[in-house]
Every structure is written in C-alpha cells, then in structure tokens.
Length: 279
Image 1 (cartoon, helix red, strand yellow):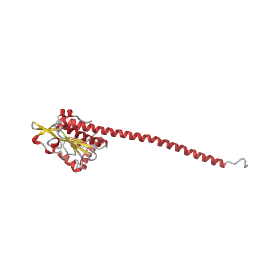
Image 2: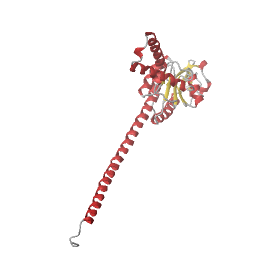
Image 3: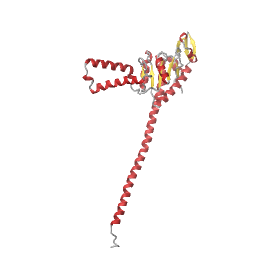
Image 4: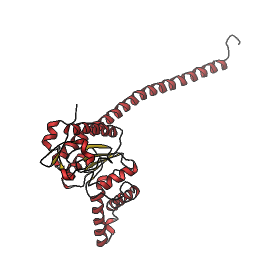
C-alpha cells in the first residue's frame, strides 16, 4: 500500500511545477503536461518515488543510522524542524555552514565549544567572569545554538541527506556527492535531478506540498525506529532467558562440590578410627 495517495497530493498542490521557460530538461520524465505556461508534475511518478525513498529511509532508521534533513527556505523551515525533531533526526534550517560535511571535524569543534560553555555555566566558572566576558560568551553561545543546535547529537557524518529544494541547497548536495553520501530530494521542474540519488518530483515551494512528503517519509522512518526497538527488546528477553539457566547450572555445580568433599572427609575419618575387631 502506498504511503501517499493521488487525491492527497493533488489537494496539497504537489503537482504544480514552475513556468515552462524556467524548466530543466532533465526533469522531462517527471512532467505530465503543460497548462497555462506551467508544467504539471506526474503524480503517479511522485507516489512511486515517495514509496521508494520511504522504504530506503525506513531501513536506514532501523539500522540506527542518522539522516540529515536540510531546508533553509522560509516555507519549509518549521515543517522540516518539527518532523525531523519528532523522530530524533538532525536538521539544518538556518544557513548551511560551508564545509559542514567535507570539513566535519571543524564543525564538531564548534559543537564542543557549546558544550564547554554549558559546563562553565553549571560549575560556576561563568559567574566568576566579568560582565563583558559574560556578554561575549552568551552571544557566542546563542550564535552557535542557532546554526548548530539542531545537530548536537550528530557525532559522525550522516548516512544520508534529505533536501527540500535541491537548487537552493546545491552546496549541501555538492558536499554529499563529493563524500559519496546518498541524497534524497524534493525536486521541482526547474531543478537538476542528476545529482540526486532518490528523486521525489514535487512542488518544493508550497508548505502543504512539503508537509505531505515529509509526513510520509518521517512516518516510514518512525516505523523503522520502532522495529529497531522491538528487536532490541526481543534480543534482551532472549538473553534474560539464557541467564537463569546458567545461574541454575552454576548453583547445582556449587551444591555438588561440597557434597563430594564431605564424603571424602567422612571416609578419611573412618580410616583413622581403630577397628574394634582388631583390638
């Protein structure tokens, strides 16, 4: 069963592309027709591509891997932030920090700086600073939080990128391509799909369109996370089932060991006792 249906996509305006004069010829396979100078996206192909992408993302989530969501355009920011946060995935909704993937160790240093400032606040070091120093550090912390706060838990490079508007986020796409990180993207009729591993042909300007695609993708990932949890519980239960058996065996062995010793002691005592018949 598909994760999205035709009517749902139609209502959200997923089928509206850009003006014909702005189109990218590489998107021709995903265009159904032209109406009033605007390209109309083939929603049946969108449904197939959403299902394909959702299945791959579900498996990534099930394996415990991180997917970085990227959307810095105004109409996508809040939707992406809410959906990504709901499944515990990192996201970037402010300016893309250049070299975020290709120079990841530097980004990690900046995140560690945030952690250091937080420790200073907790252990009282911050209170001993001058008013000017406090203001500088507070501003620095706020700036870091704005750009990197949503990727604090990203301790290593993400396993995949999900991008809304691949044209606007071309730097992020280029970095991912360079490192061989697979890219999932909502691609409109004015964008180039050639650098995207999993193309989802859709209107990337309307909030409703972005929301319906994000819903389908994040629900699939949530399923993957739930399956991962269930497998862990089953594994732990199987491990607990073996533990009592081992304990019972160990106790039985302990009980047997002293019994043998006592028998040996009794036979030794009997040997030391004089025989009445001999007397």
